[in-house]
Length: 404
Image 1 (cartoon, rainbow, N blue to C red):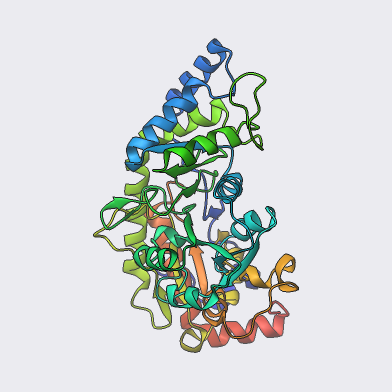
Image 2 (cartoon, one colour):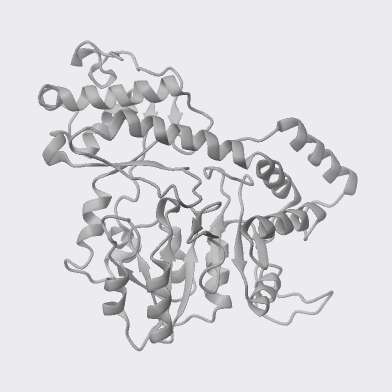
């Protein structure tokens, strides 16, 4: 599919954008709107807007069954879920966590007065490297916080072994991983707890929200108390808590989305295969693939750009895509250890080398129900065109002053 005849037609050179409407990485998936409206009407009939209403309880029950987990505790957002997990697990001192993650992950520790100790990743999986974890354990280490990046599970068995041998706790940030499995068992069942995000940018959303899955009944009860100020009945506060309750309208959105989740995953999968068919043969483009023997949500379409082979940097490719209204994203750039809340307090040398390499290569491409097959082909053709004409593009960008 030829979309540009010469580089002067690129939007970054002053030509018209390829897409009149912007293509987003995390454009929200919406379920059946009439069904959702019916639930909203019921909320007003009940005059029950929050405080553990019937839709919240129904959503928790259905998600617990979907995950095959004993307890699912909904919360108002995933970040609060991570903070509650840290407090509920009585974590102190240091927690080992990857730097290649959304900044909410280490923030949840720092906010609780816990020091995040950043660990490098396996460049093949983009997940925390268990071998590097062992070298970071000190007498102050209280836990390992793994992150299932792109919904691809961590090396859970290795992390479980390390946590048991060193008598430290293990839990997971599963923000990307709702609907994914490990060894034929749904994520949500591993570690002491797993925390999900249902933010609007996730393939399954509750507008804003999240939840904690655990098979530990005592821990689940602690989380339920914590999300409602520590109340155990009227006027009976038995512990420190916070307001992390999910509202009824968010739960209504979740129930509606849950009914359409198979369709969302199917669309994501077809998009993933379309991108893969178009891009995987390009020298210098490495496609992040999913293990199709497991359950996946396919909500992220991710490529690594090796500038030494493509001739064009990841960041210049991002500039070209953005100019054409393809709002691809750099994930997770820079690594959390290079962000200002952490760069002055977290000392590092070459120990996070793989994190920095991957953070400078990754592009997350638009997917979900908001993009068509034809649009995907055009995006891929634009990427191919940019790589095929990289010398002329770089020269033009430099002479026109568009390149930093």
